[in-house]
Length: 182
Image (cartoon, rainbow, N blue to C red; front, side, top):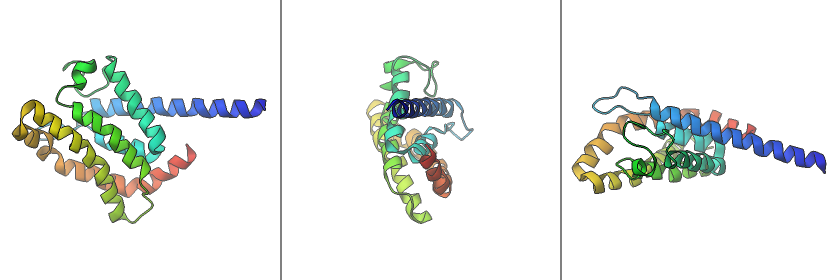
């Protein structure tokens, strides 16, 4: 009985460490700006889906919720923080809808069956990224107008997102193997 408790507690500790590592990865992905015209691009959408695929929907959700909690309490984990504000005030700003979309995206990426052909993987991963925009663009439009939301929230990122989706679709099989180890 004692051995079973030790195994269970070490398994829980391992999962906590993995979730914390995932939030660190998300923070780094928010801080590294890829030069992209006219708006620099971060790798957050890529990492959100990567976390979902690699950790599955349960641990993936735990990681994204912890990341959002860290940001809500004022830790500078988001892109542009602390320069553009921190905490809840940042989260209800122009990127708030995208941040909310991370929750749905990581769930989809971790829940869908990616043991399919490359075309199906591409479509399913596209869906998981699309929901980030589905929640982000209307919020951005509410705050700044539809023209701004289209130009600064969609148009400038389509090609980059397609490239990210392609990379994830190609590597999904290897990422799913990591999930079995975790």
